[in-house]
Image (cartoon, rainbow, N blue to C red; front, top):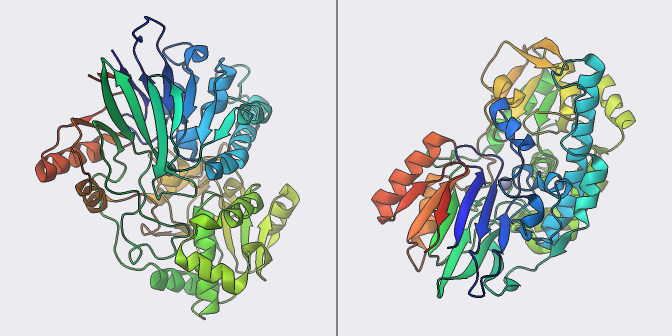
Length: 477
Ligand SMILES: [Zn+2]
């Protein structure tokens, strides 16, 4: 019998990996197996250690990967899967493939750097410390990617086909509608990946790509994210307070440091800064986007104009590409990055990684955190266990490069930038379904968030909802 097995993002928000097994076909031929997403576990050590475990079935027996979007917690384990022997195609939208083209090699590079660092400082109990995969291995994996346009049906095997529909989460993001023939019946499975903001252009100012996941879905089995299953995003426009914090910091001679993922969130923030500068709400101080992939991320973004929000279209129409904006510097080499460190004048530094788990943001924070003139601005989700989470939660110090760094800089938190639907939005989206799923499995959420969303859906829609458990197999009847 066909089944789904939850290999990740069950009980946590990272490591998204859902296996779908078609069951043996009528001729008794072997099962067809696909992975919906193949993400990396991030955050607490307990989770990260799972990145080192093999898949429960040999990787070479998995026939294909279908990828919803280019966030590392959804795509970051693909090079490892290939390293373990996977030889099938990896299907994604063209924008997702373009983004993976910068994100996965960068991830391989960071892991090599980490392993080198630990080996040099003998800080690992593993001797020698190894990268999960290298930059070269990430590049090898990219060769297996194949583009599938939105709304086009792709046949995987006689029993299985799928179609990408819009998720409205980040550039290129999709949900996967999977059709499966099992036991002589046709079953429709919907995997949401991450769900973007629902019908909320007013509530998501600065949204750079169009919002709104596809509505009017129908599914027999729904596998749904629950990141914000117990939360509601603030509904106020962040721009006024953002401007206030930046003005105050610049006035006292400080620097604004913003940990942000180089893709999407950085663009969103930079567009908002430009808007605030041009309308005279903040001074025109230098803005540094310091990430090895910042320039490439902007180029990919510019290329996919079909996904722009109206605001983005207007801003680009008026001021052109961010790469040409005066006062905005996109640093790609490490020399350029070091120059930013020398800057003694007020400026705004946007650097990755977004959860301060690695990358150039570490240098900027090690240098700027001890000074109370500066401000660290959080505009993204911080998973428990990450340095970002520690700094955001008001700790007096944080370990960076093996040293404890005192946190004296101010901390400013903005929750309005989320690219995930919150609880009311998720419920609103579910209300548009034309067919009630026989079972809804909640994944990609902390246990409390998933549990509360389960209650909310059960109460409001009367659906049968279960919170998925790690390694659990759910039969598809
Ligand atoms: Zn995502």
